[in-house]
Amino acid sequence: MSKKFVLMLSVSLLVLLALAACIPGMQPAATLSPELIGTLSAQTVVARLTEIARQTPETLPTQEPVVASPTVQVITPTPTNTSIPPTITPIPPTATPSLPCNAAQFVKDVTVSDGSVFKPGQTFTKTWRIKNIGSCNWSADYSIVFVSGNAMSGPSSVNINATVRPGEMIDLSVNLTAPSNTGDYTGNWALRTSSGTIFGIGQSHEESFWVKITVKVADTIVYNLADKGCDASWKSTVGGLTCPGSEDLTNGFVSKVNGPNTETGQENEAALVVAPSAGDGGYIEGRFPNFKIQNGDHFKTVIGCMASSPKCDVMFQVNISVEGGAVQSLGSWTQTSDKSLQKIDLDLSAYKDKNVSIILKVLNNGKAEDDRAFWLLPRILR
Image (cartoon, rainbow, N blue to C red; front, side, top):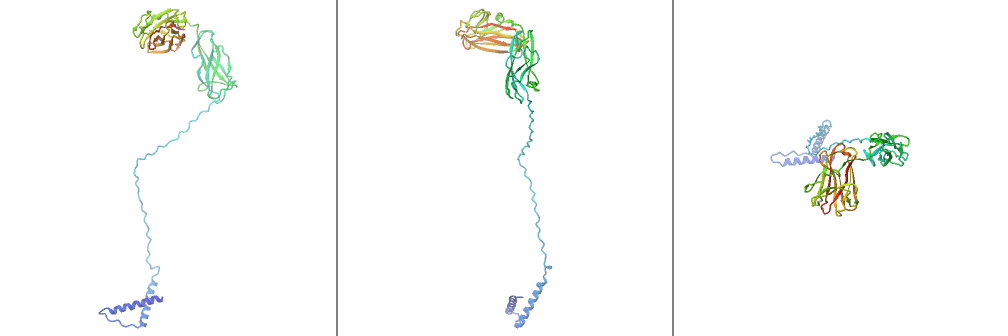
């Protein structure tokens, strides 16, 4: 026990006794001797120490730890309008088929379209435009070869004499002769590599390309529109016209003239001489009776201005009506008095086995000051 503690305890007792003496009605405390005070102080200290010694860790109250209970916060999702992006499914690339080494593609007939008409024994050159769509070059010793059909007196093969790279085109030609007998003929051709492999066109690259012709005797006039000019129904802006008619540059007229005097001189054949009606939109038109067309038929004529019309300025039209249907244009040509005539040759094979009406029309190009014009020997040839 420390001296400081004993001293403080002794002072405390003295203060208590002094206070007790001062309170009224209380008996004065007996006077303690210094020895007695020391003894009492010592006993008090001993008692306190004994009490403290008895408070062992086993007797001290145990404070259980406070365990914080976890707080669970439930969050309810708020619906939103956010759209979910679509899932993009990748498309696997399409496998590109490998190109064959040798493959060709027909581009067009450069000369002699299918159904072209030739006389017996007539020579001609057939030319095809062919494209290299394979992966290999065609060398100069590749060749075009006859494979089937009618050879038309052509060679069995002809070297191409050029290098044709993939993607390039070449014009391939063979010289042929029409058979001596009339009829329709087809010759099939293909390509051959320097090693002798035959290839061609089509999806399999094994198909041939061809030449198709019609052989017939010299052209025969099967319908002479000059001779039959007045079989047509003629009209102008003023209505129907008489055929043959007298010269009339106001209402228009038509007449047949043998050996007309044209802007280039005297002609030997017969012609239909016409003049359109005057005024804006003036014209003259002749519609011929129906005529049945056969394969190879052609309409031919020569057009121009008469020598007596140096200011002539007109437009010629050849139209057609098939089986009484709507009028179709086969062509139009402007003519002035310029010492130059226009030859017309129209293939009518597209109308094979159809009844057609040929319509000849001349317009005044906005004026009719001096518009005498002519159709020289208009005819259908077969």
